Length: 625
Image (tube, rainbow, N blue to C red; front, top):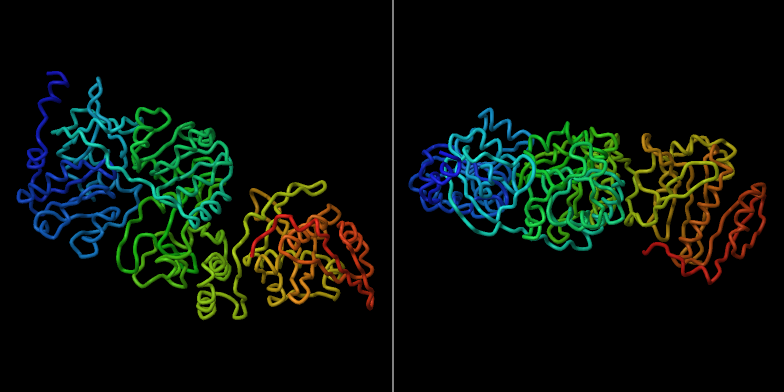
């Protein structure tokens, strides 16, 4: 008998198929949009046939009749990732949750530590060689098919053929039903302005040629929309949605630099719109593989500049990430977060990122907290976390002390909660007792590369509250003469209180800009700083700057002062004032060359400089209050 005859002989109805499942045996259901809805509904209709059958799966998008209270004697669900359709049952104790790394599930199934005796899958009709295709979800389903004693397939002609590891020989299927229904769609929500700002902040960390873990949801979609100026991005991700299509069509996602499957998009599963399902159908650009392959941190680490973007429910001031529970209530799952965070951490040039809104419940609570809510679990440890991104900026926690972490996270928390977070941090002795509160929203738009004479490009950027250690290093690298010219006194020590003077900025009335090296290997160093502080009575701002001795003579002072002029003008100030030693001819000459009216007055060896802005400078672009 040929495969066609064998295939035809295995056809049955959904009700007849599920009645072949023995009582007490664990059943795995296909994931996401690959849920075999007809078979799942048959489980509900045939419930009296079952007793103590465990139903396991990753998140599914369709019905979950096995979780209703009336089914308690027949089924008990065990979630590897908690979706909205089973969350109530988990919270009420009628279903279980198993926290597990997504990369580990296939091996646990094969070893029968997580036994699967029955696999209910959705697939395409067989091709001319007798192979069906799993379509939109390969993930843990392949391992289940390999391990199950009974495989029942729902054959659906609407399932797309997807290249990769999702081809299954027809003779592995014991029974099948026909169900010509559209795949479940998961239409993306439109990102709001908060998500778009988070997306822009994340995009600022992504370099050309990077490989992305591109998930699903408003924040991942916002990140993808912010990547239109990037080039030759690759994708290695457990899942993706519609947001990648414009980047593929626009030539931004090319996979040119991917080390494994170059030129292709590698994933484990997807769900989204009908357009997405049609787009991946027989498209050689895509290859779907099992999660023990895609989520293996070692393979993730082999990618070119791997960027892993994940989310969280809460992050405490030490950097601990809770992503699967709200207090004692389990909400979702570990999923692939740790797999990708660790893989990206091990990757040369890799960037692990946690991206979250700063608040929840319409701004009523902060997602950045002093301590995690009682009962909340740590999914990603403080030792694994690097970048945390909110709409208020980016906190880089790599190699940072608890004091530095707390301050960095407070600076990107919502302003409404910063005072409370700082108070709690002081009470726990995380920060100095006199630590000032970070103000304002970091104006990332002011960052730009500049070129100094005979030197590599530098980054000109606003100062951050976490720059204090870099300021310490800058000050103590300076010669006594340079410090004397800046402070007009002998400086042996720059105390914490004085350093905060440079950091207490609101990015409008009080502003500081730094010049920083752009070394791709070593931690950047600040080589120059300029700041102004507005006098509200006169609308003039007092300005000062300092450049590291070894960088003097390269035009950095001019770059810094011209930037201060530009920002002060744009922020509505009438001019600048400065106190300059009469012997500091270089600084006096620089001020006179700015192209504005300059008045000077000598007093006890100090030149009091007043720079009055001309009217034609008011249209320059700066920040907004």
